[in-house]
Length: 259
Image 1 (tube, one colour):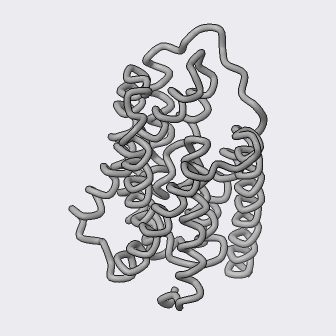
Image 2: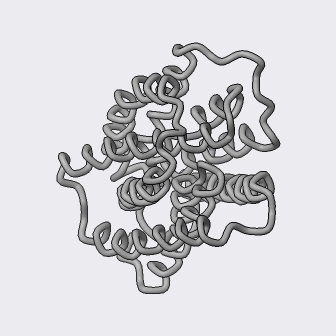
């Protein structure tokens, strides 16, 4: 993939702002929206997008947690991280194996993952009467970690489980943001240790960081006159469409190569 032009970079930065805005209001969606949108429209390579998303989540998380960090559910957070951190390293290693010769397969896997995540999260979750045990959070973290290593989007299994706990929504949102901050810091550390941070990632990342800060600030300063549930459903609808589009385009490319 050739280096992107300014129009592609500007589109990526707008995507980052929209993802930060949505995540600040709902507790999720930054990584999913940015990775799916950038991959679908070929704005940046998958590896570069994943590196930048790790930084953007840290920017958004620092702004959110500077005020709300005490609301996090620490037992759920710790158990989820115990499951996620080892499998993020595994997913990152798999990305290195696939990056050179299996780009369309990578897009197909991402499309399936995004579609499944959107379908899983559609609708208003109804909390369970009793809290899940630590093992459930460890398993959810481990399941998300593989995709976190591949695409910097480790949230859906943990999101699904947390939204079904008998917890205040504020606690769920802040716990999710805290989980994303730690897991993305770990993934970013793997990238730096691997010395795989490119010049393109630095240039695109600087603009995306500013866009993320603006999107986070806007969501906190000017919340929209609609419910969080409405925003959540719109975000999931966009994710579902982007996931399906990724599957279709990757499958067509693979069938053409096979033919």
